[in-house]
Image (cartoon, rainbow over the protein chains, first blue to last red):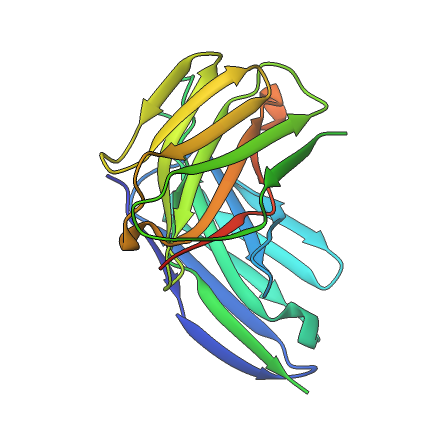
Length: 113
Length: 115
């Protein structure tokens, strides 16, 4: 099956710093999503981005589908950005009814004041 | 707008006891529904998915089962819990948006501790 690798696995930032999280995937994908899991466990949708670039406030994401990677940029980090960031991809070959996402293992971000 | 609920939020159960976790979705009809488990160490494992009432597909053979008695209700069950069933259980649904792309959304989760 498809492999999804995220780096770095852990990241500690000083408040106000910028960071880049990376997601590599081993096959062509139809869909790609970035999620933030907050310290209470809630998975929050950040971006749906199978290709191109999107921005939402201090966060932006870029997916280069032909080179099989996606990047999540966090600028001017805040303590509320702490948590685990997941990349998840969908191949498109698991049947129209199932739509199964494959998740990376996540990047654990800690923003310290 | 669509909302996904999970009940209960936390649960502590003894080994060998039964389990029933509930997931309900509001604001949509005939959703694809999913159960994931997240053990300590972050990875999400897909357990079951359902494309309609009474239709369940299992991804991982184990001590758990799922049922979909109503269009917007998805139940995760076990007859006898094991220690290894401890974890964070997440329910999810798919928003099919045609050319705009399909996006998965998650409920708040149930944290299960088996003692």
